[in-house]
Length: 261
Image 1 (cartoon, rainbow, N blue to C red):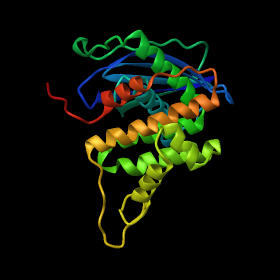
Image 2: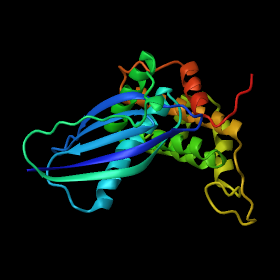
Image 3: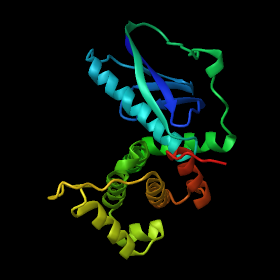
């Protein structure tokens, strides 16, 4: 006997793009749980198989949210853009006998999934695997995502993203500054901006609050991207990564900026 949960998400983009078509299979290392996931167009379908499931719907929802979040972060890091996944339905199948087969069909022809370039497809799937394998990278990537989703609150998420890497890798702020490619003094100024009487990370006595603008948000996230890339290289010395130009393109693809010709 086995149980299964199929979660359906509506996927949207800040620039009106459709999510490219992806199919991902994932097996959890410490359990018999397997996931088969289809992303494309305006939908994502996440099917969880294996073992008896707790009938608590909140727990099942949380697991699917975690998997969907890894994918939206991978789309960001891979250069596909900034996508949001909103749960719109969930089906639970209990006491299944025998082998399970399933497929997914997108809702309407006009919103069918576009094909991503081979480079972006490879990058997204590569990052998905890395985020599943390395918690610290996943935490920092999630904060990069949140920084772009909430551009007026960028600094708090960028700061925390850098802290995840610093604490997780056991390095000091001087190393983080080198990874980003800025003087330690400049990083110190950013830390001061985030921490002291600005209302960014802590409440200010004055009640005043500093908010980032869209342009500064993109620059700050570029710095966090540089730190994430350096951290992954430190974890896996064989990983080739990508150029600073490609990282900047990934941020600009996701940044909440209107570009006029």
